[in-house]
Length: 273
Image (cartoon, rainbow, N blue to C red; front, side, top):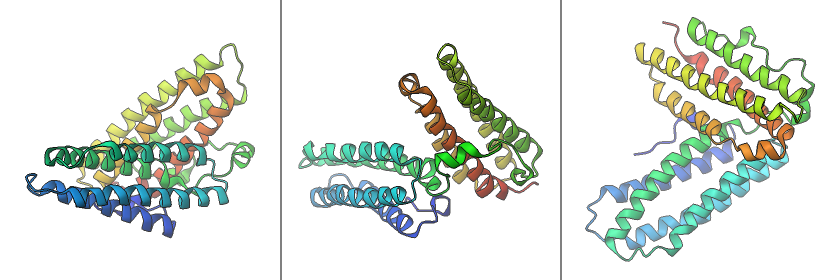
Protein backbone atom coordinates (compact mmCIF):
# COMPACT_ATOMS: atom_id res chain seq x y z
CA UNK A 1 0.00 0.00 0.00
CA UNK A 2 1.26 3.46 -0.92
CA UNK A 3 0.71 6.20 1.65
CA UNK A 4 0.87 9.96 1.40
CA UNK A 5 3.31 10.77 4.21
CA UNK A 6 4.36 14.02 5.89
CA UNK A 7 7.55 14.28 3.85
CA UNK A 8 5.34 14.80 0.77
CA UNK A 9 3.56 17.84 2.23
CA UNK A 10 3.99 21.12 0.35
CA UNK A 11 2.17 23.16 2.99
CA UNK A 12 -0.39 24.25 0.35
CA UNK A 13 -3.68 22.68 1.44
CA UNK A 14 -5.34 22.32 -1.97
CA UNK A 15 -2.25 20.82 -3.59
CA UNK A 16 -1.67 18.43 -0.68
CA UNK A 17 -5.29 17.24 -0.79
CA UNK A 18 -5.06 16.62 -4.53
CA UNK A 19 -1.79 14.73 -4.07
CA UNK A 20 -3.53 12.52 -1.50
CA UNK A 21 -6.16 11.67 -4.11
CA UNK A 22 -3.48 10.78 -6.65
CA UNK A 23 -1.91 8.44 -4.09
CA UNK A 24 -5.35 6.93 -3.51
CA UNK A 25 -5.60 6.15 -7.24
CA UNK A 26 -2.16 4.55 -7.08
CA UNK A 27 -3.30 2.40 -4.15
CA UNK A 28 -6.42 1.34 -6.06
CA UNK A 29 -4.24 0.17 -8.94
CA UNK A 30 -1.98 -1.72 -6.52
CA UNK A 31 -4.98 -3.38 -4.89
CA UNK A 32 -6.17 -4.64 -8.28
CA UNK A 33 -2.69 -5.94 -9.00
CA UNK A 34 -2.71 -7.89 -5.74
CA UNK A 35 -5.91 -9.71 -6.69
CA UNK A 36 -5.76 -12.99 -8.65
CA UNK A 37 -4.86 -11.94 -12.18
CA UNK A 38 -7.25 -14.52 -13.62
CA UNK A 39 -10.15 -12.20 -12.81
CA UNK A 40 -11.46 -9.66 -15.30
CA UNK A 41 -10.70 -6.11 -14.10
CA UNK A 42 -11.68 -4.28 -17.28
CA UNK A 43 -14.18 -1.88 -15.70
CA UNK A 44 -12.02 -1.13 -12.65
CA UNK A 45 -8.88 -0.55 -14.71
CA UNK A 46 -10.71 1.58 -17.25
CA UNK A 47 -12.16 3.64 -14.41
CA UNK A 48 -8.73 4.22 -12.85
CA UNK A 49 -7.21 5.30 -16.18
CA UNK A 50 -10.08 7.68 -16.95
CA UNK A 51 -9.97 9.14 -13.46
CA UNK A 52 -6.20 9.58 -13.64
CA UNK A 53 -6.50 11.39 -16.96
CA UNK A 54 -9.27 13.67 -15.73
CA UNK A 55 -7.86 14.26 -12.27
CA UNK A 56 -4.30 14.94 -13.44
CA UNK A 57 -5.61 17.58 -15.84
CA UNK A 58 -7.54 19.25 -13.02
CA UNK A 59 -4.73 18.99 -10.46
CA UNK A 60 -1.99 20.22 -12.78
CA UNK A 61 -4.18 23.15 -13.80
CA UNK A 62 -4.67 24.15 -10.16
CA UNK A 63 -0.97 23.74 -9.40
CA UNK A 64 0.16 25.80 -12.39
CA UNK A 65 -2.40 28.55 -11.69
CA UNK A 66 -1.08 28.83 -8.14
CA UNK A 67 2.54 28.93 -9.34
CA UNK A 68 1.65 31.58 -11.92
CA UNK A 69 -0.04 33.66 -9.24
CA UNK A 70 3.07 33.67 -7.01
CA UNK A 71 5.46 33.93 -10.01
CA UNK A 72 7.20 30.71 -9.03
CA UNK A 73 10.41 30.33 -11.11
CA UNK A 74 9.90 26.56 -11.45
CA UNK A 75 6.64 26.93 -13.41
CA UNK A 76 8.17 26.17 -16.83
CA UNK A 77 9.88 23.00 -15.59
CA UNK A 78 6.68 21.93 -13.84
CA UNK A 79 4.65 22.33 -17.03
CA UNK A 80 7.09 20.09 -18.89
CA UNK A 81 6.87 17.38 -16.23
CA UNK A 82 3.07 17.63 -16.15
CA UNK A 83 2.83 17.21 -19.92
CA UNK A 84 5.04 14.12 -19.75
CA UNK A 85 2.72 12.60 -17.14
CA UNK A 86 -0.45 13.36 -19.11
CA UNK A 87 1.01 11.95 -22.33
CA UNK A 88 2.05 8.76 -20.54
CA UNK A 89 -1.44 8.21 -19.12
CA UNK A 90 -3.06 8.91 -22.50
CA UNK A 91 -0.94 6.23 -24.12
CA UNK A 92 -3.15 3.68 -22.37
CA UNK A 93 -6.14 4.84 -24.44
CA UNK A 94 -4.69 2.83 -27.32
CA UNK A 95 -4.07 -0.35 -25.32
CA UNK A 96 -6.55 -3.21 -25.57
CA UNK A 97 -7.42 -4.02 -21.97
CA UNK A 98 -10.17 -6.52 -22.85
CA UNK A 99 -7.59 -9.28 -22.46
CA UNK A 100 -6.97 -10.25 -18.82
CA UNK A 101 -3.27 -10.83 -19.42
CA UNK A 102 -2.96 -7.35 -20.92
CA UNK A 103 -4.81 -5.93 -17.93
CA UNK A 104 -2.17 -7.45 -15.65
CA UNK A 105 0.66 -6.01 -17.73
CA UNK A 106 -0.89 -2.55 -17.80
CA UNK A 107 -1.50 -2.62 -14.04
CA UNK A 108 2.11 -3.63 -13.33
CA UNK A 109 3.46 -0.91 -15.61
CA UNK A 110 1.01 1.69 -14.29
CA UNK A 111 1.86 1.05 -10.63
CA UNK A 112 5.62 1.23 -11.32
CA UNK A 113 5.23 4.46 -13.27
CA UNK A 114 2.89 6.17 -10.80
CA UNK A 115 4.93 5.24 -7.74
CA UNK A 116 8.19 6.45 -9.25
CA UNK A 117 6.75 9.58 -10.82
CA UNK A 118 4.63 10.73 -7.89
CA UNK A 119 7.32 10.36 -5.24
CA UNK A 120 10.04 11.89 -7.36
CA UNK A 121 7.92 14.71 -8.74
CA UNK A 122 6.50 15.70 -5.37
CA UNK A 123 9.78 15.34 -3.46
CA UNK A 124 11.93 16.73 -6.26
CA UNK A 125 9.74 19.62 -7.39
CA UNK A 126 6.40 20.19 -5.67
CA UNK A 127 7.76 20.62 -2.14
CA UNK A 128 9.65 23.66 -3.47
CA UNK A 129 6.50 25.46 -4.66
CA UNK A 130 6.34 28.85 -2.99
CA UNK A 131 9.72 28.41 -1.30
CA UNK A 132 11.89 29.88 -4.05
CA UNK A 133 12.16 33.65 -4.44
CA UNK A 134 11.53 35.22 -7.84
CA UNK A 135 14.67 35.28 -9.94
CA UNK A 136 15.26 39.04 -9.62
CA UNK A 137 15.34 38.77 -5.80
CA UNK A 138 17.81 35.89 -6.02
CA UNK A 139 20.24 37.92 -8.09
CA UNK A 140 20.43 40.90 -5.70
CA UNK A 141 21.23 38.93 -2.55
CA UNK A 142 24.68 39.73 -1.23
CA UNK A 143 25.75 36.09 -1.06
CA UNK A 144 22.92 33.56 -1.30
CA UNK A 145 25.42 30.69 -1.30
CA UNK A 146 26.95 31.43 2.10
CA UNK A 147 26.75 28.53 4.55
CA UNK A 148 25.59 30.05 7.86
CA UNK A 149 25.01 28.66 11.36
CA UNK A 150 21.28 28.25 10.72
CA UNK A 151 22.13 25.28 8.47
CA UNK A 152 24.14 23.40 11.10
CA UNK A 153 22.72 20.01 12.10
CA UNK A 154 25.23 19.27 14.85
CA UNK A 155 26.46 16.19 12.96
CA UNK A 156 30.07 16.95 12.10
CA UNK A 157 30.35 14.92 8.89
CA UNK A 158 26.99 16.07 7.56
CA UNK A 159 27.74 19.73 8.28
CA UNK A 160 31.16 19.51 6.61
CA UNK A 161 29.64 17.97 3.49
CA UNK A 162 26.83 20.53 3.40
CA UNK A 163 29.45 23.28 3.47
CA UNK A 164 31.17 21.66 0.51
CA UNK A 165 27.89 21.48 -1.42
CA UNK A 166 27.35 25.19 -0.79
CA UNK A 167 30.91 25.84 -1.97
CA UNK A 168 30.29 24.02 -5.25
CA UNK A 169 27.04 25.88 -5.86
CA UNK A 170 28.86 29.15 -5.11
CA UNK A 171 31.44 28.26 -7.75
CA UNK A 172 28.64 27.86 -10.24
CA UNK A 173 27.11 31.16 -9.09
CA UNK A 174 30.37 33.00 -9.69
CA UNK A 175 30.67 31.37 -13.10
CA UNK A 176 27.26 32.46 -14.31
CA UNK A 177 27.91 36.03 -13.22
CA UNK A 178 31.12 36.11 -15.27
CA UNK A 179 30.03 33.78 -18.07
CA UNK A 180 31.86 33.98 -21.39
CA UNK A 181 31.26 32.02 -24.58
CA UNK A 182 34.85 30.81 -24.93
CA UNK A 183 35.23 28.68 -21.83
CA UNK A 184 31.88 28.99 -20.08
CA UNK A 185 30.20 25.86 -21.40
CA UNK A 186 33.05 23.53 -20.49
CA UNK A 187 33.26 25.07 -17.02
CA UNK A 188 29.54 24.65 -16.50
CA UNK A 189 29.67 20.97 -17.44
CA UNK A 190 32.67 20.43 -15.15
CA UNK A 191 30.95 22.06 -12.16
CA UNK A 192 27.70 20.18 -12.75
CA UNK A 193 29.57 16.88 -12.87
CA UNK A 194 31.40 17.83 -9.67
CA UNK A 195 28.07 18.63 -8.02
CA UNK A 196 26.51 15.33 -9.15
CA UNK A 197 29.43 13.27 -7.89
CA UNK A 198 29.71 15.03 -4.55
CA UNK A 199 25.95 15.01 -3.95
CA UNK A 200 25.83 11.24 -4.46
CA UNK A 201 28.76 10.81 -2.07
CA UNK A 202 27.13 13.06 0.54
CA UNK A 203 23.75 11.35 0.36
CA UNK A 204 25.42 7.95 0.75
CA UNK A 205 27.31 9.15 3.84
CA UNK A 206 24.21 10.77 5.32
CA UNK A 207 22.09 7.65 4.76
CA UNK A 208 24.82 5.46 6.28
CA UNK A 209 24.80 7.64 9.40
CA UNK A 210 21.00 7.53 9.65
CA UNK A 211 21.07 3.76 9.27
CA UNK A 212 23.70 3.47 12.02
CA UNK A 213 21.42 5.26 14.50
CA UNK A 214 18.29 3.46 13.17
CA UNK A 215 16.64 6.76 12.25
CA UNK A 216 12.95 6.28 11.49
CA UNK A 217 12.96 8.98 8.81
CA UNK A 218 15.57 7.17 6.69
CA UNK A 219 13.18 5.97 3.97
CA UNK A 220 11.68 9.44 3.51
CA UNK A 221 15.21 10.87 3.26
CA UNK A 222 16.16 8.27 0.67
CA UNK A 223 13.16 9.19 -1.48
CA UNK A 224 14.04 12.88 -1.28
CA UNK A 225 17.66 12.15 -2.16
CA UNK A 226 16.63 10.04 -5.16
CA UNK A 227 14.37 12.85 -6.37
CA UNK A 228 17.21 15.37 -6.19
CA UNK A 229 19.65 13.06 -7.97
CA UNK A 230 17.03 12.56 -10.69
CA UNK A 231 16.85 16.33 -11.05
CA UNK A 232 20.62 16.54 -11.49
CA UNK A 233 20.67 13.63 -13.91
CA UNK A 234 17.90 15.26 -15.93
CA UNK A 235 19.86 18.45 -16.63
CA UNK A 236 19.58 19.13 -20.36
CA UNK A 237 23.02 20.00 -21.71
CA UNK A 238 21.47 21.05 -25.02
CA UNK A 239 19.55 23.78 -23.20
CA UNK A 240 22.77 24.88 -21.53
CA UNK A 241 24.37 25.10 -24.96
CA UNK A 242 21.46 27.10 -26.45
CA UNK A 243 20.98 29.60 -23.65
CA UNK A 244 23.70 28.96 -21.05
CA UNK A 245 23.47 31.97 -18.76
CA UNK A 246 19.68 31.96 -18.39
CA UNK A 247 19.55 28.18 -17.99
CA UNK A 248 22.20 28.15 -15.28
CA UNK A 249 20.54 31.00 -13.38
CA UNK A 250 17.29 29.03 -13.19
CA UNK A 251 19.13 25.84 -12.31
CA UNK A 252 21.09 27.51 -9.51
CA UNK A 253 17.92 28.92 -8.04
CA UNK A 254 16.40 25.47 -7.86
CA UNK A 255 19.52 23.70 -6.56
CA UNK A 256 20.21 26.14 -3.75
CA UNK A 257 16.55 26.47 -2.87
CA UNK A 258 16.14 22.71 -2.64
CA UNK A 259 19.31 22.32 -0.59
CA UNK A 260 18.33 25.01 1.90
CA UNK A 261 14.79 23.66 2.27
CA UNK A 262 15.98 20.06 2.66
CA UNK A 263 18.53 20.97 5.34
CA UNK A 264 16.12 23.13 7.32
CA UNK A 265 13.04 20.91 6.98
CA UNK A 266 14.58 17.42 6.97
CA UNK A 267 18.28 17.18 7.87
CA UNK A 268 18.00 19.24 11.06
CA UNK A 269 15.54 16.62 12.37
CA UNK A 270 18.23 13.90 12.27
CA UNK A 271 19.37 13.09 15.83
CA UNK A 272 23.02 13.84 16.60
CA UNK A 273 23.48 10.58 18.52
